[in-house]
Image (tube, rainbow, N blue to C red; front, side, top):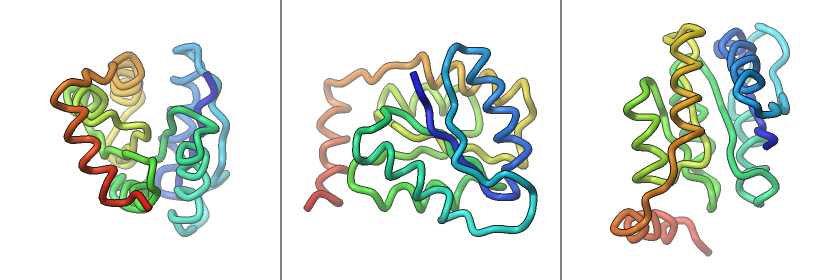
Length: 146
């Protein structure tokens, strides 16, 4: 599975680690930038990944900035995106199981390689449980549907 990934300058180092982790787990990351640590504006990169998930070109995406918040806020402006700020494995699992998150947003300044590995492994292996959670996800979706 191809997974689009992007970061700003604060998440660049973590993005490079995340790309390695995705490859180790058998996924093919496609890097939408940034490609260095020069200061940049995170919305430009979040939009690129969010558009790919929003239009169904890719099922899942990964966004990383210093706190993860800016990327998450930007991605959630798209109708079919359910981006989740994830900082540990429990939140990773629940974001998929209960919220059907399709973009994971990571706080690059807070996570090391092992944490990124475990979080992505759990997030990518978790499945949406449906049931009562489906009703709730549909209510979220109705807020942005046209």
